Length: 92
Image (cartoon, helix red, strand yellow):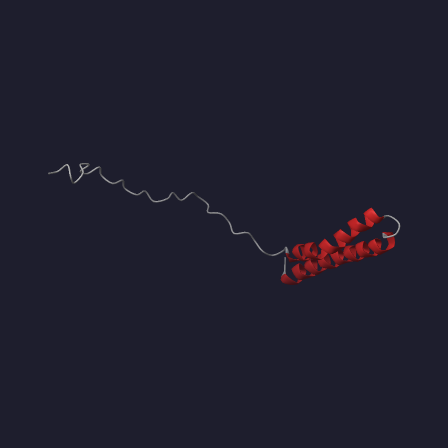
């Protein structure tokens, strides 16, 4: 997908989301004195949609970093020798 097509698609998604938000706010105004519970739901939807619209509009060309194709084991550290386990006071 070219950059122009990607930008056009993002703009289209953002405009659609903002139209839905506008309709939600208008529904809040119309329903406020008729059905208060539905009006509150549309008000909350209208408040949250700008954030959702920006997140949806910004989703696009980014690709997730790929994971390594094979497992890389951690380096093995040599164990310490047991050595002399006697305490210094026992050596006298």
